[in-house]
Length: 282
Image 1 (cartoon, rainbow, N blue to C red):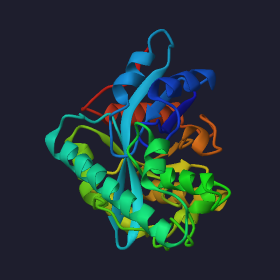
Image 2 (tube, rainbow, N blue to C red; image 1 turned 180 degrees about the vertical axis):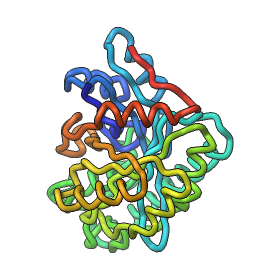
Image 3 (cartoon, helix red, strand yellow; image 1 turned 135 degrees about the vertical axis):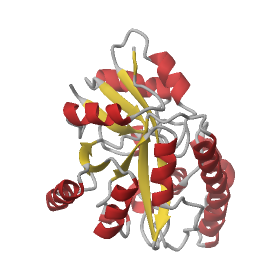
């Protein structure tokens, strides 16, 4: 089985529609794909409808924006009940504040001399929840930076960068507990991605494990081999599973669906922990 547990659609900051993501997963030879848009489940229904006759299994999920000790981090949540009130309210709060933040970032970019505007960013985002990747694409369109990745530096959009604006982000221990209370399974996304900015300490990861974290996403494009080895060792110490995923965003990033995958036994162990929802098979 080929299993990719981290992919985005244009319901957040990917470029594929949920149906196109399903088709791309089939074309990539995947058996299982997780749809994990940022703080939203808006793409789940379309992806589920597109499954018919494909034989692909869809894992409904989301990627949550968190913050602790001055560090931003992401938590993957799988197979939770999307209607559970407390978790649904927190996702709505994060989405609402992301919109406020995005408008302020565009204003800062303009003050710094970037010839972009809000209408352009909204056009790029389309149906998705506007975020920094859409602003980064606007900077590329305007010739300010050559690639989306080049926008995520201290010069522009990186955490703490010249154009950055803080947004509401959930405390990660609280997020783990919310996911579990909604019947879901929480996994720490790319915990060693130092190229994105500061990363949390092993002590923070231990606190998350104590709160109910299920796994660390180890095999990821932003982790080099020494980082992967360190994270595997830490996961073993803490009794956590380890996953691998592409973090696919369509044309917005160069990574391919299925570039990194999760062991089938680990996948089954994660699914066994879920009580909020079940994987869907076409």
